[in-house]
Length: 241
Image (spheres, rainbow, N blue to C red):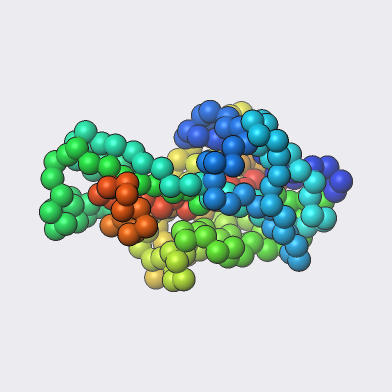
């Protein structure tokens, strides 16, 4: 992804399915997403491309300033043979009481299914990159409270997590840090009572923050016969040199 294109250059980004900044480069397939937009200070545009194009995003910017690229996947289903594998995932994402919650709901050892949706945002600084991130209507959403391209990041990057229309406190944020040499470091953070966390960042590094919210599946997913639903809030950005 080009995080700081010059004014007049297009916004170019790949869709990845993987982890640690690695994985499969996905092509542009509208059947895979419910939303794919570019948002600037005073305007917004849907991402439009040709079916099968890669990179999936290669589109003119909306002028000078901070842009927010928004991607919401369509819900998908993951099947588990046993509870232990799901428990390992849940514990890794900071849901310490998953075993008790599973038992209270009368769910067994397996097999069972999880339905999941990804709510991703990427901050792109076009030209002077002035502007601010903001809520864009995602059900699970991470918001940068500072502009990583123009603000002083010496004391860290402040973010806030939302779930529906409320702040989300006491939730783990996993931060992936990619150095200029390609090495990736992972740190864990926790949102406070106001849903905020401060992420330690370094100049010249790229960051991806994610937070996972687990819940009983929404009734709209009834046909999937899933036992759990996960909502993935994701935010990527780069800190300039």
